[in-house]
Image (tube, rainbow, N blue to C red; front, side):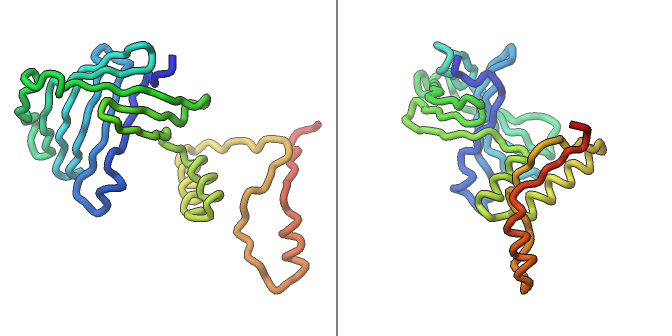
Length: 200
């Protein structure tokens, strides 16, 4: 079965709307008694959102079928939802759609979907701080921020993990070139670190 059978979130317009006061995204919930596809326009944390929902089902293990059936505004300043009046039943097939999962990586972190209107989505599972650090190192950008984020998360957990025995490959260091040729040479040789904390 190739279909992602979990809730996931697709940012649809993040790159198209830099500086705007709203974002558009999609949430898909399949492991529930009421499987849903939800298209959401979030105006801001202070205002609220418009959610257009569809009943969903899975066909052949990789196609998500959906039919829009309700919509409402949720304003932060109101204790109730305000219906968004769309006559979904009168829209017929225009209220229906599907998403095919055409590729799913063996790790489950990357998948490609195609929609009934021809749109292709390349989706990566939201990365954890460790992965963000590795990505920052490979791109050479945002390394300090990624290190700070990872360190702050570990400090909030409170429990110190144990350093594993074995050989560690150095991926990056903050050492800059200095006037000392010997220091630069030593830094250039420091590619690996061996840690044997327990008897071997």
